[in-house]
Amino acid sequence: MPETQNHATALVTGAALRLGRAIALDLAKHGWRIGVHHHTSGAEAESLVDEIERLGSKAVALPADLTREHFIVFESGSITRKLVEEFFTRERIKPEIVMETENVEIIKAMVRNGLGISIIPWQAAAADVKSKQLFCSRISGVQLDRQTGWLYPKMSRLPRAVSEVMAVFETVRPRLPATTRPA
Image (cartoon, rainbow, N blue to C red; front, side, top):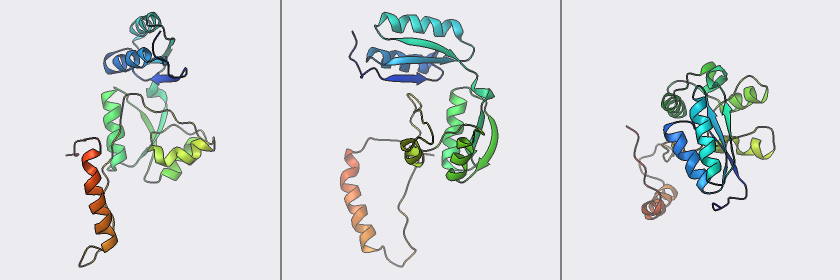
């Protein structure tokens, strides 16, 4: 029997083929139950379900056309929008975008009112998920990284507090996971 993860369940989008298939199999090998999402790859999804069950885990094929979902997204030009568009392209999802905004609170309000679904940073959704106002499902096998930076008032010199924080950060940076800088 595979190492168990307390019967955790993962929904893997695009699981029938390529990367999604590899992610689903890896999770299944570690005891996860798998929802095998597919759009038009029904035979491949059923084959994957059989393979997962042979590994001793549970799985179910879940056909769904994500292109029919209404998406509420960040406005064009934002870093989050760029990452989401790259995800859609990679997964071959052609979303129906019904609203664009720069405000995450507007996005969450629209989702809460049933006007669509969205992909937003976890930090923006955490409190709403904890209070059970929204449901969040992590995108298995996909990490959407955003570039961040220090923000401080324009001055002729760097404020002491900022320089001390940056010095501490530079000492811990070698221990952080390596990522590539956006182009």
